[in-house]
Structures are given as structure tokens and as C-alpha cells.
Length: 181
Image 1 (cartoon, rainbow, N blue to C red):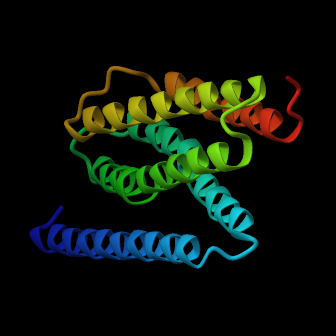
Image 2: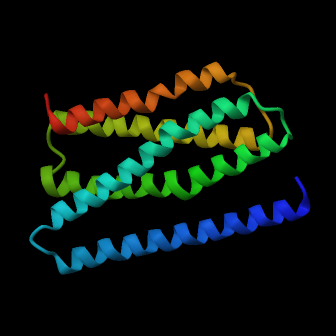
């Protein structure tokens, strides 16, 4: 990678990070304004933002391990490997982690406000979200390993790990919609 290309990538990365921070601040300000305003439909507005955050988080949770599949097949230090490092870092830091934080904060508020933290289904859902958060943490650790060109897991591992967020998501959706317990 040339110095000029690296400089362009770093500038684009900084711009994306600034845009993401601005978006998070605007989102937080909007949610805070909703809570101060306290419209009759506040719970539904918070739920809507919560669902958007979950969709964003889950999109990253299923896409990042696919990037790891392709990254693990690339040669360390190659242009392709360096491109994957940038893509993975931006996805994780700018989209996935903020979306996870928003989903958690608003989800806990919804659990308290709507259900008073009662119901076996809710605790099973929270346990599954904790599991999803642990997978998120594993992806972060793996991202750092890929960034330093450590590749101790084959592409097959990442293909299998790619299914874990999907299975947890299905379980969570069933707990929330069906409430079987």
C-alpha cells in the first residue's frame, strides 16, 4: 500500500468515525428529548429505536465473521489483508459496538418500564443477549489478532462461528414474540 493510499484510508476512516460519533450524539439527544417530552407513545418510540439498534448490531454480527472467513484466506501483509483489516475495524468500532450499547441501554429501559424485569422469558432473553455480547467480545479479540496478522483459526472455524449470532437471534426473537415461559 502506498503512503498516499494509506493517508486517504486514514482520512476516510477518521471522517467515518466522526460521522458515527455525530450520529450517536444525535441519537442520544433524540432519545433524551423523547424522554423529556414524554409523549404518550414514548415506550413505542424507544422500542423502535431499540429495534433499529438491534438490526444494525445483528447485521454486523453476521457480516464480520464472513469478513474473517475471507481474511483468513488472504496472505498476511497483502493489499487484500490490509483492506480486510480496515473493513473489519470500521464495522466493529463504528457500527457494531455503538449499536450494541444503544440496544443494551434501551433494552434494559424497556425491560424495566414494560415488564419490571419479570418473566422467565425475559430472563432467558437477557441471558441470550449476554451470550450475543460475549460473541461480540470474541469478535473484538479476533479482530485485534487479525490486525496483528495472527491467524490461528482457519476459514472453516469462522464459517461455523458465523451461525452462533443467528441461532441466538432466533432464540431471542422467539422469547420476545412468543413468550413461551
